[in-house]
Image: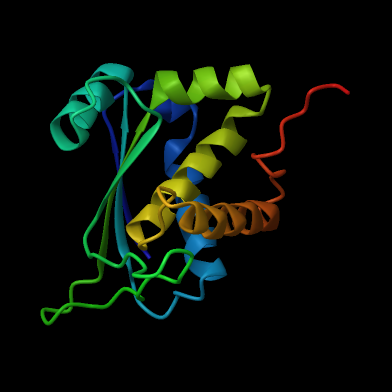
Length: 170
C-alpha cells in the first residue's frame, strides 16, 4: 500500500491522521484480501471550510461533511446488493484507488455527539472512504447493507465497536 497523507489543517497532526489512515486503509484492504498490489491512496486532512468547498464543487452541496471520496476507477456493483468489480492496475502499472478528504471539525463534533473516542470515529470514516474507493456505496438499500456489514467487520478487527448501534441508555 502506498499512502500519501496531505495535512492542510495542523490539528490533524495531534490526531495522528497519518497513523489512523495507515491502520484504516490497510485494514480495509486486508479484510477484502486486496494486498497483492501496492494500491495507492491519498488522504487529505482538512477543515470544514475546505471540505465545504470540495462538497460544493463535486456534489453541488455547499456545506461541510465528514468525509468525501474520489475513486480512480468505476467499480460499483451493477445489481443492488452485489459486489463491486475488483480494482485493476492500469496499462501503465498505476495502482491508484483514489483520494479521500476528511474534515477535522465535523469528525470531532460527530465523535463527541456519539460519545465515541475520536480515533475510533476517524478510523471509521477512513474505512468508509476507502470502501467508496473500492466501489461500495450506500445510496441503494441493498448496497448500504453490504457496505455497513463490511464496515462493522473491518472495524471489529480493529477492536472498534459497531458504529451503527446507538446507545440510548435503556
